[in-house]
Amino acid sequence: MRSPASALYFVVGGDPFLSARVQADLVELLPDAGVVGLSADGVRSAIRGQTMGWIALLRFLTLIPIGFLLAGFAPRSGPRVAPALVLAMHLYTVNFLLIVLLRLGYAVFGFEATVTTSGAFEFVHFGVERCLVATWLTVGIRVLWRRTWPVALMGGVVVALLDFALLGVTFGFGMGAMEAWLGRPPGS
Image 1 (tube, rainbow, N blue to C red):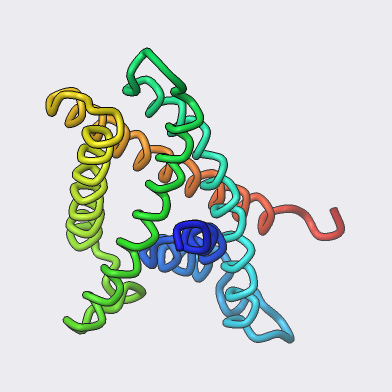
Image 2 (spheres, rainbow, N blue to C red):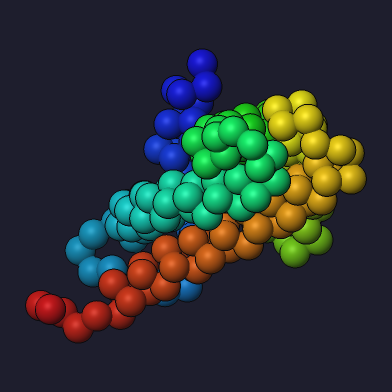
């Protein structure tokens, strides 16, 4: 169950807010008047899919720094890096499952991620998600490596914040690549 869920996380591309942000930037970068002879929505959809693919690939590569950071919280005796990389993969599975649960919750309460992209709503969304991820990591570090609660809490918070920062970096690189690709001269 964990491997398919982890693989889906990278194939799907993650958070609906990121996808909505990509779509909003595409509307700005590629207005209807800029697309001649084609469906503007179709072109934007294809470019959004490609951009989310770039972001998913970059996101997958962040497993490495997250795994090495988690290895820093492992006990000094025994294997450290391999179990930490496995825990990092589980972290991405938890991220994916939280996104699915948050999407279901939004559907129940009538929120639409593509419409609700206000800064306050995104702040609450990512705040709740990061708190849940930090809690899961804290318990994981405590149970897996039998670390004290303060060490586990520090590890959970640090890794959750770094993971969020890496998500921002991967999103920035993906958006920058899309913008550079759309801004290149024709025929190059």
